[in-house]
Image (cartoon, rainbow over all chains, first blue to last red; front, top):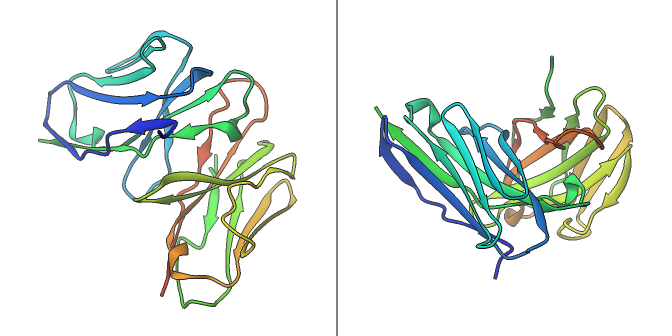
Length: 113
Length: 115
């Protein structure tokens, strides 16, 4: 079993839809959870960062962590064509360095106008 | 402010040739990372440096790969000899070693094709 699993998609939704992106993981020591967004032919950029369990909201984006289920989610409300990108989850354990960051393979999202 | 700068953006070479990828991290960042991204394997860490010192190179696929960081503002990733299976996008990223979220700032990548 891979440490981090992420459905690669592709996921296609109409503009205005609510999008749910998910990752599961196997290492219960993971404490830091991140979502990176990667536009085509660009490098990933940090979108959301969460420590331990709970929710975090930033504008149209909400990140959720359920450590009991080893499951994290990213919700996008009122999706826009500009949200079309690949979304990668990433996580690491407490005390680990950025070099211990484990990435999912990414979910490709397309928002159609 | 300039972000992480990588060169070349695209490289097409023939099997057996030497390839050198270059990276200039964000000024003031003291950690530097080399990643490789493919459809099959996703984003994989190859090696990372803290304060110009290699910390973990366990992700380097084999001896054909080497990386150096001679100073805080420059790093290279070299593949010699290159093989078709090395075709991928190679990303350099930098961050602050301590404090904050430890966010990685990625360059735009070097797309390598080995024929």
